[in-house]
Image (cartoon, rainbow, N blue to C red; front, side, top):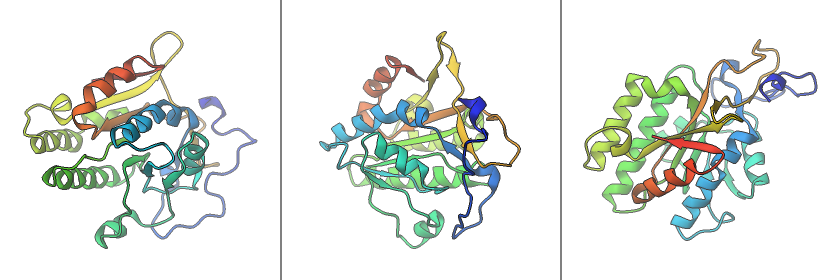
Length: 233
């Protein structure tokens, strides 16, 4: 639960770790198991779309904190998770990004990380569409206020243009997903935060931003609405 994020029994998220890039403790909100469970069915849908199994689906999470995301995804049945302590942006610059089927990540929220991630996704979508190949689904856990920011609205309009459509969310084939609480209301996700950073409770409402499913988008979003996690445009 959110109240237990900083419990005395929890270990420091980043204790003893070093990274080959600059890291801000304020960015270390590790994705919870409940949040990953809510999108596990989307990963299964992505596998079916490619005639793969959950054992052969390659899931890429380029932002590394302490490796917990990979362990949780493996516990949910996804064995081929690429989640390494590497400089994502350097890998992009060196054309050294690994092959993957789905991008799933909870990126750093500071600086321009969100915009740089969206730029990467836009380029990947463009390349797949130009090659007339299946686009790679993306599942991004971000604060809900992200969807109202100018850089995100620009991402949506740019994505819609790639698909030769007008509009934003529907044209860009993007939908949002959050947890449905006991009374049917949206419920805040818990996160595992770095110990001692002064965040006893998560200060934002986390939302999954989902896209890249192509022609299957409406069916996938409809399936999300029927589950405990609530999908909506």
